[in-house]
Length: 149
Image 1 (spheres, rainbow, N blue to C red):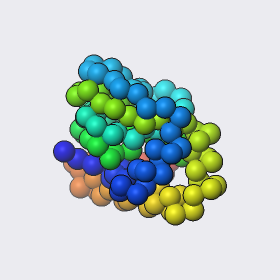
Image 2: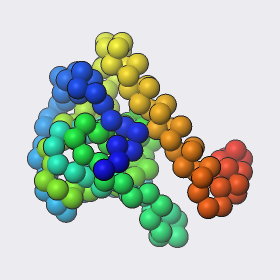
Image 3: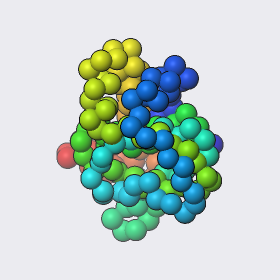
Image 4: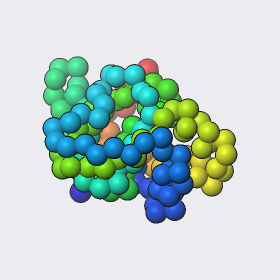
C-alpha cells in the first residue's frame, strides 16, 4: 500500500486530531472529494483505505494509489487554496478526521513543530511527483510542459 508521500507520524497525527473539527466514518463507494472540486480542508485516514486517483483531460487514469492509516488526503489543495487535483474514494470502511482550511491556518500559526512537519511532507510529495514525471514515458515532453507553464 502506497503512502503517496503524505504520511504523518503518530505525534503529528495526535496534533492533527486536536485540530480536527469532526471525525467521520465513511463506507465504499463514498467519495470524499473529487478532482476539480474547490478545496475545503483535508483528512487524516485513521483506519480503512481510500483510493486517490487523477484523470487526464483525455479520461485516462494518470494516478491510482490506495492509502491507509496515517495518510493525509487533500493536504496540497488545502495548503494552496486551489481545487483538489485528485479524487478520493473510500474502498474499505474508513474513519477520517477532517481539518478545515480555517483550522489548518490556525494549526500553522500556533503549532510550529507540526507546521514544519507538514511542510516537510508537502516537500517530499513534490520531490516524489517530480521523480515520477522524470521516470515516466514521455518524460522530456512532460518536463518541458512543467517548465513552460
